[in-house]
Image (cartoon, rainbow, N blue to C red; front, top):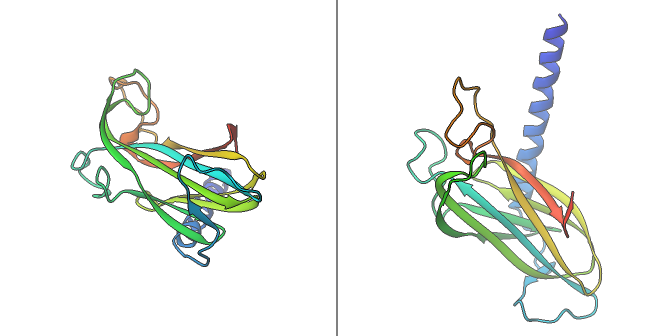
Amino acid sequence: MRRALIGLSVFLAVMSGCTRNEELLKRSSITTSSDVFREVPLEEKVSSGYSKLTIYSSVKTPRPGDRLFGNSKLGTSVYVLLINIDGQTERINGIVTEDRSSKFNDPEAGVGIRYIFEKKVLIRSGRHNVIIAGPEDGIAVEKVINLVDGTDNFFLLKPKYGGVAIRKKPSVYGSGPRFTNGIRGFDTFFNGRYM
């Protein structure tokens, strides 16, 4: 009986997390405002009442065709991130390169496709609600940030890769989470601090 209750609790917790993710994915793609931020050249100075915000992520996925089942957009230029700041939505296309990392016990070790996502925007100083979504992986995060007047700010998303089934033998690259198992979420850092 106790195991059944524990199992039911875990199932309900997972399902409520999935529902929240689906809601965030929907909200991230809906534009309700168009004057919250604008893309800005690196050399442009910040005027009074505004701040610069750089959103950055480096993500690795399997090459197209490396997975028998799953998302066919992985490893292609169609793979994108969506950002939504206070209702203004923008699609970020990544710079795509092949990556052949071979570090032992590194979740990104092996041959795959690397995406570098970066967007620099000028935005009013103050408090902002930020949603960043990876629609192809079905993941989204929502954070509230506070931008101080006249500052340069950095919002970093580090991917959390999926785990692997227990193996009798460790893989060449070690055991644990691997990029080949997909992205399960993001760790977020704002100006170097974990959020």
